[in-house]
Length: 520
Image 1: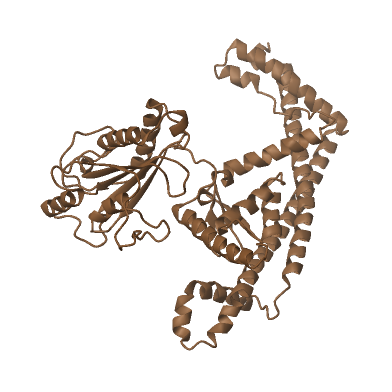
Image 2 (image 1 turned 30 degrees about the vertical axis):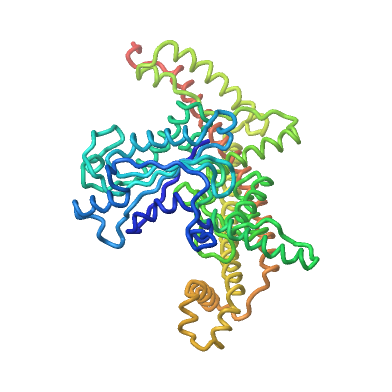
């Protein structure tokens, strides 16, 4: 599967881009690796070509273009764009992908998608993670040096006119992903759909945080092994990775969204909320929610609801239902009104069969519940309405208390986490500097203190008691919610049955009524 990644650089030293591609660099620090004489070491293998540079080097071509058009003089101006097309490691064995073939594909890709820009196209045989994936670096100067023919993916004059800067918009990235997929399809290489998120979303920042953390952990474990001790942890996990695994563990053992959100808070202290149809999660110690998009495609609302429904189906397979649920009672169709509105004979035939089936279901329901008189039916509807409203009021009250407990628990966790930091503030030599260094931590700590003061909490509650109280409220809420749903379903059925009875007798009255014009 080929992927494409985009980076930008504001470095005015254009020669640094070519230096990075041709010399060995430390993957963690980004600094060049020197030989015994203090000189940068060349990479073992690479292929490099330039485009739109004429007789000049890439760096000189970019500087000439900047001087000609008076651009890229500011410190914050983007000087170069760096695209990396990485091929599937299996392509080298299964599909005969070589460095030479990858370089040809990269050159053509650059010509098709970045015409008019000075560019370096460089192919490396392996990634820094030793995965064996051949990849192509395409570094382009941000300024176009000549006007090019307009292509379908170009929507504004600045996309083809000379002296204009390259724009890497979301539409451009989408086009490039499609171009990569088409390139791999034509070259018979492995490819996936790049337009859809695949599993966990690991950003560049998180990826390097994991690599650095794993490196530190390996060094620490090596020291423990040298001392004859057994390491307790061998795989480093980032905070986001821990959060994903905790959410997955709860998602696999719940069947409703209410149970999912409650169990996340009870077991891991993770709050979940929905806003504008999107889910976001907030682990303990944080005040800002993390959107599902930044964690994983599997944790977005649609995928979560699908997983919960699959859990329900699995539970049904393990414990199959002995009785098949009857069809829901639906309202009778007003045949005369619809025929008068222009419905045909076929519709009338279908509607008569439909009404016959619905009327028989209505009679069966009323006989089953022994509500064959109008007064008994009306009285039962009033009783169900009272039960429905009372249960809903209790559910809302319990839910509000659970929200309050969740908020209190979040502030309590933050307070305990950063209280040692606040105590240390009293002993440091320069409190102002220390507080500025830990501004974010003190902000959430002070917010927690303000919350306790506003709610009159002089003695802070125990965390375990809060969790136990939350679990008790959750079980109570589930019980009342079950009563509420049961009353709601029965109330809806009886109201539909009541409307069907009224519609049926209105029809009978119309059929037996004598038209005025026939009376002589």
